[in-house]
Amino acid sequence: MRSWILVPPDNDKALDSIAGSGADAVVLDLARAMPPAHRAKARTEATNWLRSHREQVVAARKFERWVRISAMDSTDWREDLDAAMEGTPHGVVLSHCRGSEDIRQLASVLYEIEDRHGIAANITCILPELGSTPASALAIGRLADELHPRVAALTWDAVSLAHTFGARRLRGPAGRWSDALAYVRAQVLLIAHARGIGAIEHPFRDIRDTDAGVRIAETARADGFTGMFAIHPSQLAGINAAFAPLESEVSEALKIVSAFATNPGATSLAIGDRLVDRAELERAKRLIGED
Image (cartoon, rainbow, N blue to C red):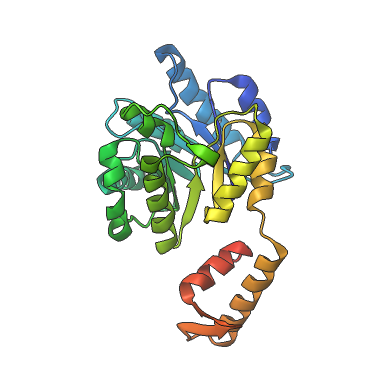
């Protein structure tokens, strides 16, 4: 999935228009900062919206329904999760994820809720938001060996990390991420590809600078990310275009899939002047929609 948009569920206008926005995944953001008096309303609105868009019978473009919940060390995450699961979302974005233990704890609670509501076991996916603090950033590498099967993709949290150590900028000359942020970003990208799951880029926050937003989305795709978060519908067209597969990529993917279909027992095959393994086969299938 290319485009993921964060939507404030306490904003009725945003909720009413988001279904036709063109996003591949709509993420209702219960973890965002909001007055305590708004939080109960936001949970109720999130549940209702998830239920009302479950079928998408007349939708011009199908999209997945996700919810971003508060951090596991907060007092709000369980109520956020309960509200989300009432609407049977496709998955949960875990904000400020500290590492594999947070993911395991969330997965265990999800299993209990699925069983209680008669939802198919292990169907609810998890998207951890990594690197929000220096400690959690240094723990990312452990996920290469400890990633839970529910994890469908990885993303990261540049803004929160920068705030924790007083960074005055996210990007340096030519728009490059500062060193500490680039380190986290690279780990997220490498682990996602090592485990054969999606890598979703951090959102670009300046919605007024459309040209810069498009350039950053194109850079993320060129670097190997499979999708990107948006914070406003105006960013979605640029993200969808940046992450759309090129004709040459589709052609190459079809060749890979066809070659392995002809040789189903092969662990690797020579295709053109390259030796292609089964990990690349899985990437090719995802690119042409056969995953």
